[in-house]
Image (cartoon, rainbow, N blue to C red):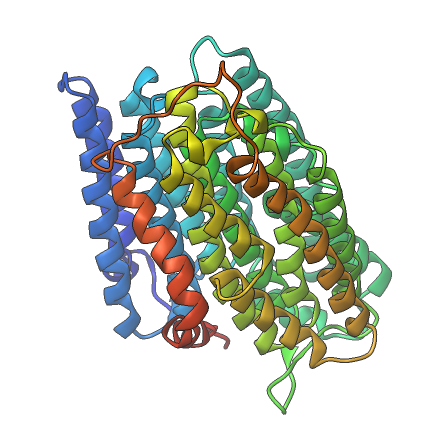
Length: 496
């Protein structure tokens, strides 16, 4: 299927619904006094777009809009993921005191615009479209990071994010210009065909890949493009931090997989992926994966702010996900799809508890969690324990199953990849220290006399979101086959 503009609209309903919701929020913001109703409109629009996305699974895969974007199960998976993250973020925002202080119409419009950009990141089949979609996500993220009014930390985080993002985008588009110069096209299919010719300069191609990888790495937050992450996570509103920590990473993974797998690699007769001879980018990812998870975990050890600790934890988890890319096989890709869903559940859950406690205490420092279980917040403390143990990768939680599939896919390749698994296992042990430290502070340390008593009723709005996330973290650690089947089904690229 190769459709032009008008014909493509029949398969563009999720984007149309999301765009209409954004415009409707902007108009109603001028008319409605009760701004929380705008969140409900954003929620309804996101759910409607989610239903429309599921409906597209029965459609024939192919190119849309003159081969600018692509429709296949892989793109639909990440569209569902972006909408799920947006819905969770909206629900978190309804119970957050931080969001009540901001301009809510602009906030929800920008949030959905960011999700819309992630739609295009996952479905781009052209380097120009990939760049524009990444910029759409980046620009809205800069604004949302600095959205807290009269907050110097938030403004500083947005400025740092903008500077790092500008440099990464410039580096990426420079690499894309090299690809265009060598192949004469921005279309992935045409690039793949041109790169198979023997006259291509392999050294120049490898350098171009490194430049492009820098732009993608800035979204995935792998080392050395991670510097913005801790400041942004700490300075941004907590609900958006949760969204950014999972959706931005997943969208970066999606655009990177789309480019490096069906874009520039080819499928061998046995069904395995093969990279261009002489341009061994998977080995670069192997090295980056080890460095990223190690730097993330070591830097997290001495953090005093819980959001910064979770930021460095996110960097380490980006390193784990890179393992699935480095092995260049379908098992690795399937493990990544499984892991991003699991990571969405447990990481959003952890940030939700941070938001709940900050609503009462106004603090995000780890010391403010001292004796939390004895100060009236035993349920959030217990739920946070589940999320942290799952992030560590301990059974019987979902994080253990996610890491198991990743490690198994890497071990299948043997050779140097066994070292990668050993490094990952050692890093998981290191992560246990700083995750367990939080659990120890909440349950074993007695509160100081000046520590506030935290009164959280079970009727609190955030509990309606906290309990399902906790249950899913446990359930997917025991009964994971439906999610695994969905991940395997989504590993379907349209290649022609």
